Image (cartoon, rainbow, N blue to C red):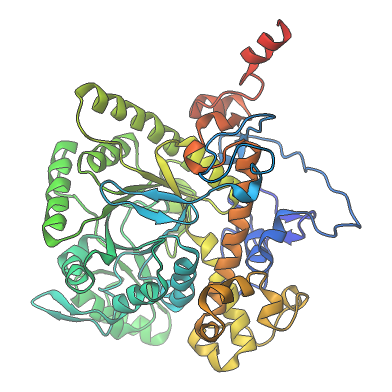
Length: 552
């Protein structure tokens, strides 16, 4: 087992718990007082790209040993000359080809293009209570930055205030809140995406969304995610609520209607009950039947009026990966998110996260291979089709992760999906707001009674604490700032760091727009990674050109 570094003296960061490959703690707490790199970057922004104590220190690489196959065993290739993908309006001169001029905007879609200012999107923020509690920070932050945010599965079904008629939803206050919060600050960049699983399909969530919001919302079919191979779960601590969820058709475990479970709950032996979703396609026995059912569902959604449809799939094997890429491409979907094992979750069985599925780099490497096969097939058959645009997910948190994922899947990958990494600033900002604006503490779900030293060292006012406070103020106006949650400001600040860091990596690779990024921008740091990814080993990449130079 590879152990990842918990401290970084150069940046002044430390993980509270065990460090994952992403650099995040394996268990991320909403009340955390710091200070992993993502946490601290939510306050200091792009300053976290550089070692601390400038003028008093020098710093050097920790010389991380690249063991095993992971995204950490890919390295980014720099170049000493040239410039590709130079944006319109600038030249390829040394005065123009500077990292702040690197264009990191992206777009995805088949017939309709959806734009994003930075090539990230959120993971599915669904029926987990932590997603609901911090939604304003998440959604407003995403809208202000301009990246897509996903309303995950089961939001309608777990809403106590939702109303149903003949089994179909007619009132969904929580889903409305989620969509409307994002749309309030939406300026043409990013998107609000609503997922469908088995229960959502049964209760008419898609019909509700299209009737009320039309093409303002993208609909997403849900096959799975990287953290688990069963449906979504939550834990409820109210026995009557558990019974309500059972009546609405969910799997509730243990069964709240059993007398012995009621007694155990009343005595305190059982303090919470799990609600599970159903598996899809259980009545089908081969991929051709899945294809037919999938195409039928896509056609149904198009007839309802959805102009943009996406698919989210998980860390299943190669058959399922090929199905997702082929079916999504044939159906002319707008995006396919491929989530590898090693990602995060609101609630999944722990050992399932540890033991099931295909790790991200393996899955994403095969996704590229399969996409190229399909592209050749389309060209040979002269079909007027394209390989579906993709987003890679599963354990990403930093700017180098973004670059590597985009490069590994280029030219098909348009976005990198991040889960906990863009939730952390929402938690942190809310905790700070709860202290500095105590009247908002309950509303924003602040967990602190006072600022910890890890925050107060930067100041006692939001203008001092958040490096991008004034950037947000310029965007929304001074009067509107009173309505912007600190969690959204923290998300904006983190994304400013991710953007600047990505621009720097791209400039070093001499790529000045995202469309110019390619697999040639990566090295494999060991032979295993080379074998899995097809990315050349460090000393063999460019070796032929090097020898040509020497023999010239």
